[in-house]
Length: 194
Ligand code: ATP
Image 1 (cartoon, rainbow, N blue to C red):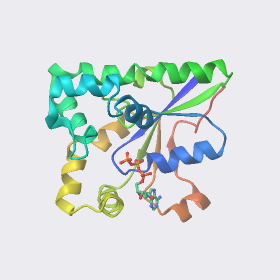
Image 2: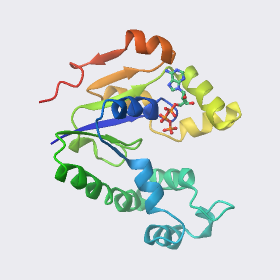
Image 3: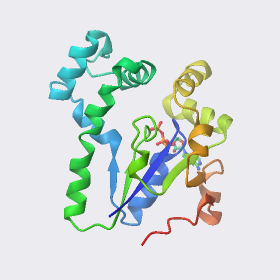
Image 4: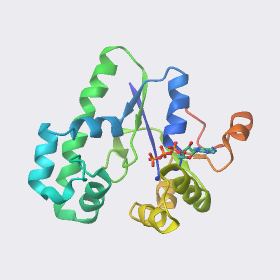
């Protein structure tokens, strides 16, 4: 079974690209959905996270603040075991698809490199976007001030660094309408998989 790694930066367009894979009937393992389930209020994962980081890790509504969690976990080497806990849920999803006989699946995960899952995926597809376009889309989508959007962006591994580690770069700067007509894939032969 071939596992394609799909990653990128905040608001770079991963979900948009991943929905295109879905439209082509390629199964997706969505790490965000897995993380959301694993951290559901009252679940084992939730209790572990609150136990490790205290109530400060919760939002006002009592749910885990995943942005805050990500920031702590990836800025403090002593807390790096936490993503491992979430990542441990991923193989179960992969196994389910393998049992169903899928030859190609896409692992859609914003933190592919940070969680060191890149060694399990080939090719690695990075959805890249011009930094100013990324900022604008992030502000519009999440209704953020420019300062907040810049802070969220700078809390992540640089998108250019991810790009340098990609097998395939999808430049998602152009508007979607233009993209569907022209496409914009660079790097190795696009999804050459047998
Ligand atoms: P995150 O990891 O932060 O959830 P993401 O990488 O999955 O983000 P998307 O949610 O797909 O990014 O895209 C971010 C925003 O930009 C969305 O509002 C989306 O509709 C818009 N967008 C994505 N690609 C394009 C495009 N090519 N043209 C115009 N708008 C786009």
